Image (cartoon, rainbow, N blue to C red; front, top):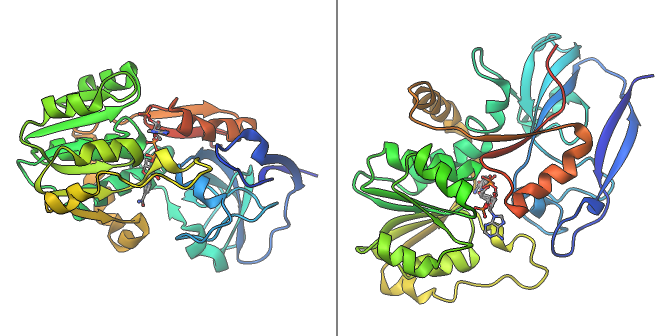
Length: 341
Ligand SMILES: NC(=O)c1ccc[n+]([C@@H]2O[C@H](COP(=O)([O-])OP(=O)(O)OC[C@H]3O[C@@H](n4cnc5c(N)ncnc54)[C@H](OP(=O)(O)O)[C@@H]3O)[C@@H](O)[C@H]2O)c1
């Protein structure tokens, strides 16, 4: 009898998430019913937001329950199908969770967010530059941030999956200057050499306040923030009058056991007449097709340098997830489980 290896949520983290919060489980393969397809996972994708789904707290999606398969996006290949819209061999992406096999059920299609991988596209791009993070960068920078030519742009976590695309969209959009913040010399070198940003600041080894003063003598007109905490606080001191702050995420606060720090410099929002706007990708679901078309064009023209960090082996799922919080990933954090047939 074939088995289905899974990673379940074992306990809710208090503070920093650890491998012990997950439990390996060897489940039987579910029996296929009419209207369902069985898919085999090829790649898993990791997002910092998954840390929030582990908390027993209300958010934009329900928490993962204890004992449930950890929720996550994946690319998978259809092994057997009893639905008319899929045949064996098709490659699709969706929220299939941390498991080697999943049932794709017509009744769950919207929840599983199923997308067929277009011809000519490497399947794992549906998890990265054409998936959640690339699309978040697209809508956050262009629609929420309303990027305009001549902007002076700062992006935090700029060598990550979302930040790297956001920063390069700012460059494509004819910003006057684009600066990225990242956590190592290797990442900063990638940002200036591969992503062609004007400058990169290492927040771990440089004085961010001083470096922002040097890079933005006339202020930041658009700040795309993935980090929150001290980085946001410091950037608020360097915003231009009427500047815009796009709040995409706040990864520096996701693993804090205590009450998260508020921005101490929040009065700068008043004094500098800033517009601060948060958003969630799901709000833009209807427009995803157009965004993917544009992103594919820029990729094919070589205007977006696309980085992925691909780890190997299903058994390494929790360990791979933790890389997001230690900053080991450059670009999109993926885990390869299997090759397609
Ligand atoms: N609003 C939405 O709909 C939406 C959708 C997707 C993602 N997001 C948000 O976008 C942000 C980036 O997500 P991603 O998937 O693209 O991840 P990512 O940037 O590829 O990976 C996370 C990066 O965050 C940095 N980081 C980790 N811990 C940090 C800390 N304590 N302080 C400062 N930086 C830290 C690390 O880079 P360094 O080495 O540079 O520190 C790490 O590589 C997250 O905040 C996420 O929640 C929002």
